[in-house]
Image (spheres, protein in one colour):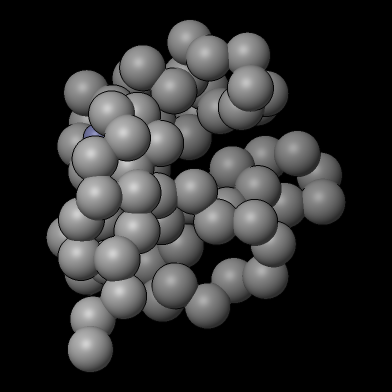
Length: 71
Ligand SMILES: [Zn+2]
C-alpha cells in the first residue's frame, strides 16, 4: 500500500511518490530529499506553485529562494 501524504502548500492528499519531500536540517536550511531518507521533519509539496506559497509562510522559516532552486 502506498502511503498518503499531504501537500503543505494546498493541503491536498496525494500518494507519497507524487510529492517532493524537503527536510529542514539542523542548520535551518531546507534541502530536497530525493531519496526520501534524510532525517528530520519532512515537508511534502506537490508543485512548484505550492513551494512558492510555502516560501511566503512564516510557519516554514528558511524555506526560501534557496530551497526553491532545488525544485
Ligand atoms: Zn500542493
